[in-house]
Image: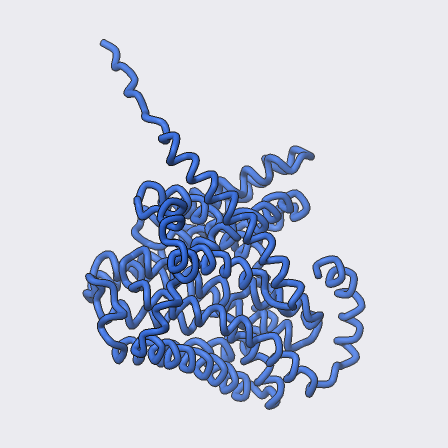
Length: 440
């Protein structure tokens, strides 16, 4: 007896048409506005986020509701198509970030980086949790637990964005400075701890705030790290050796993509965030010593130029800046932003000062770590998807990510003017020069 194949319905004609128009319009505007932002010496992500603001409820939805409803209908099936592309983009982006994480730099400046990072993590985390308990209940999603909401807000305020920080330092030609290297090291520590915190809090959002469930979530995160170290490393090394037998970049791109996505699926199956699996896998790939970075360039380019901008624009689509016209939301946004800046600046500054750095060095590293950028957006999107953040709260968290990324370059530039370059930094600048010119 044989089983007849069950016919799989194809995407409806109109649904596919809307999806293709969405992708084409979003990506086209993201490319244009991202390049414009770079010309204005701003992170490209600012322009890409602006696409969502222009096409979302903040502008298009308010001025042309009919067109907005046709182009971005509220149908979950239609929205999930666009979201799926963005999810692939963010998983690959996080994985590539992990691949480029220099564990040697962290170990070399370990004590100072950890102390600075600890101050920049604990103080804004505490402030965020405290504010989360004080904000009006209207900012919570309908079924959200107040404790989980407060913890999510704390995580959103304590993270830093190493991709944005590294890009800013590179564009400003400051990566060769000692303080630039230290900032990247501290941001790397922030990234690792931030992903772990996000995974634990996300697990709490789905399983509930009970001591046993929290311990299970923490234990699951530790299990992921142990399995990645004991089993992941030999599997990754074997896969990369097989890919390296080809002179073509195709096998390397395919193998890295497969490893990142399957690792994301593994942590998602454990009811942890998929991004944790991608990030940990990226670290394992990058530290294997077998990755040919030139062969990975096509994946990096496609992710950064196509997939990631779709994710950022999709995040912007969910922002509703008209909510800021409501006094409670505006007041909450001002309070959260103030806590985010003071907490990160103050925490990192105190951590750096306790490590023996000067006042201007401490100010510079505080300015650098203040950029939330990509990581803040991912936290916000995760909170919205899990039903922890309302649209108003989501808008506030995304605003924090944008504003902190905008104020980082001028503050960093001002502080570093006060710090003279050493002879070693001048020597390092020569070796960094060619790469910096190619990347800006």
